[in-house]
Amino acid sequence: MKAAAFLGLALSLTPSSARACAACISTPFGDQTYTWPYLGLILLPFGLIAAIVGILGYHAGYRPRTLVRRLVARFAANDDPQIIKETT
Image (cartoon, rainbow, N blue to C red; front, side, top):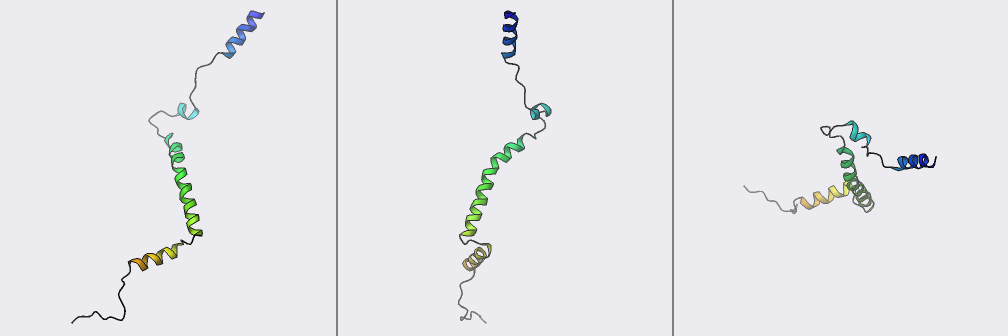
């Protein structure tokens, strides 16, 4: 009886063959659907950083209308409106 119990315990504790996950079993390598989770995990930190920087920038006063006004003022002509530059 001890030998049978020992054999049963030994067989139950031996490692079985490794099995792949459900996604790896069901799709062959021709189907590249397993790359989307990795792409999402790689791009997620960049999206979160962009969102945090956008929120902090908005609260710091960098609103869209303010930025447009600054850009227009920077690249607009700096001519004096009192000077007439008409030539005939």
